[in-house]
Every structure is written in C-alpha cells, then in structure tokens.
Length: 312
Image (cartoon, rainbow, N blue to C red):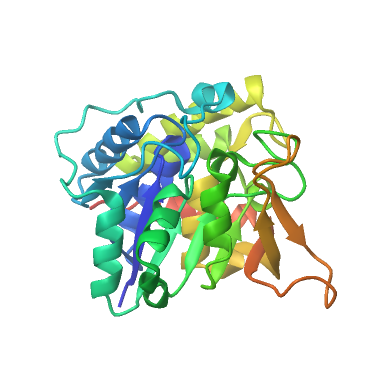
C-alpha cells in the first residue's frame, strides 16, 4: 500500500516540486496539503498550492492555515526569499478552491481519526504543526514520523546560523523538535549538497510532462535567483530543498543522517532561530532527531526525473 503523507507547505517553487512528487509518486498517497505563512503570505501559498495541483491534473484537498507565527506579532519576510519565489507561481490561476476548514483543525481531526499511518511532512515554518500539538497533544500518538525540511548546522540562509523555515517561527519549531515523536530533519546541510542544474532542467523539459516542464521552469528561476542573491556551491545550479524531504521518504538512502539532539534558539540576538545540534556522542542530551548531514545528488536528480515523468 502507498505510504500516506500530509504535506504542510508555504508554497514557493521548491514546495511546488515537493507537492508534485508527493502527488505523482505511486509509492505515496497524498492525503491533503495544508498551507502556512512563510515564503509568502498564506493566501498566496494557498493559491500556489492549488495552482500546482491544477497544473498536473490531480485533486488533493488544500486547507489554509496560520497567517502569523505562533507567538510573534508580524509575519516575517525576507528579500532573498521573495527574489527566489515571488508571491505567485508562474502557473495558470487556480480553478480549484481551498477547503473551508482551517488547516490546524483538519490536522487534528485527521490524525485523531487515523490508524496512525500518516507521515507528516512540514516543509515550511512549523506554525500549523505546533498549533495542532498545543491544541490537541493527543494527536502525537497518531503521528508515526515527522519529516521536516528545515534547520542548519554549518551555514544558515536567513542569518549566519538560522535557516529560513525555523527562523520564521522558532517557538513553533522548538515545540515540534521536542514533541517526542520520531523526527527526520532535512536541513540546508543536506539540501545544499543535492543541487539541480540547468542541464538537469533541460532534461526535464525533454521529458515533456506537465510536472517535468513546470519543474524545469521553476528551477531555472531558482538558479537565476541563487546565482544573483544567494550563490550555491556551484553556479548554474540550485537546491530544491523541500523536494529532498519527499525523496527521503521514498528512499531513505538519498540522505545520510546522524541521530543527535536538536533544539531551537528562541532568544539570542545573533542566534534566534538557530537549530542547535549536539553531536557529542554520549556526552550531550538524549538524541531526538535524525539530522541529515549529506545527500546523494545523482540519486536525487534521478528520482526527480523518474517521478516527474509520470502523469496523473
């Protein structure tokens, strides 16, 4: 049976690729998608998510979630994020509509009614997930695993140490990291080692499916923005962060993890939003997160091509 998943997204371009992978993979059953403020305002994230599903001809329910961080007064914005994603994806306006239920309420209801078999995949700020845990902590026993795209150990992308998703809502991230459920964290350390190149995009275009072409267009835009504003490890290539988290569910071997203790800094003027990673074997706090330190770029790109070559 396909593995059931829920994606919690702040849909910009890498979320879009993750959504297409989850919707088109025969090994996954995408139960629904929830949206949260992050790459752009939450109503744009919702519209983008609907656009993605319309573009590839799938019907997945979309639930709009939190518009503000858990305990901070304003939605964070970052110029570099806007340069990479913009507000609206370059896809036709959605004809599908979001579901009327709030994302947090739907997450609670869905998990309480489940058989404990739905992996939760948050690839944006963790506001929806933390709000659901805080409101109904009994859902935790029904979540078999949380696979998160977020965090960093070596280098941040919002500050010197902090990654954008965690930095957007550190209080929420701290709740989730310490929730006691199995967690795989796919941070910048891994995603920065699995780049997608212009040559890869050309191959996606030749595949010719709606998903492959849309991915090529969006990743080419990412590469231009990264080269201009946030250079990756090599020019002419860029990470597609959120897609790697989905691929890690399909094939855990696409990432290399260490089981360590991870917490989140919520106060430091220089370290706010940092994932504090304790690699001290036997001397630090008890491990709570399988933290990805590396990724197999060739395997990742091959997985993208294989799945995005499918149609609904």
